[in-house]
Image (cartoon, rainbow, N blue to C red; front, top):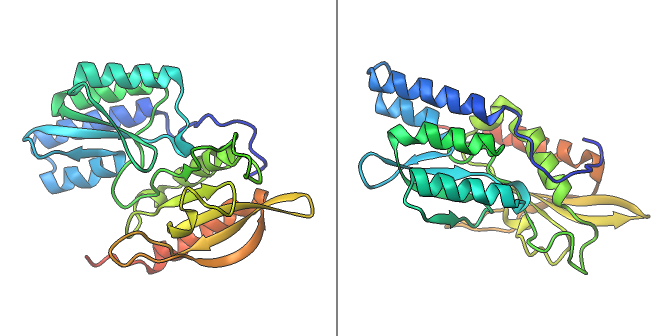
Length: 249
């Protein structure tokens, strides 16, 4: 991964293809060719969750580093108004959720979002989840450098790997612009904290953090990895997790 030059997320699979696959799977589900459990295994990694109200679903749209543009907002608002309950939810991982979508409306909603270049891939399940970054990235006086392009490029690199959609558990990554770590990179499964050494950009790499019932600060694996190699460090952490994580439950 060379030094990123843009902060506009480009999904590895065109969102329109994911929407078409979802429509095909819904058809199979309605014909009884797949069970409800098998349908769930397919849809949850695509960011589609069943809600408590029978027959309604939540659609979670990922926004790496929290980058969201005016056209994205218009597409989200239209999809929620036309297909859901008209109320958008912003998550703690910088994603946006559309609620109360009927099953017949999920595919049209995905198509609406696809036309705006928006993807739900990896929005749920045992996947590489949305990669977060500091909310003040690019304007913070304390940051070593703007980490937004790195978070976006890291997303494109990781989500392109099919293994990233079938991990033992969800895998959370965050990228911080300075040691104050306002985004909590050190308490994610993998975290990058921007730093500089001898005028060269890089990241301190953390692994094994968590915010659950047994929360912990991650272990620092390397105090300085060159910025153009940071994606390899995160990929290595992901592979160890993929190989050794608990898949029994």
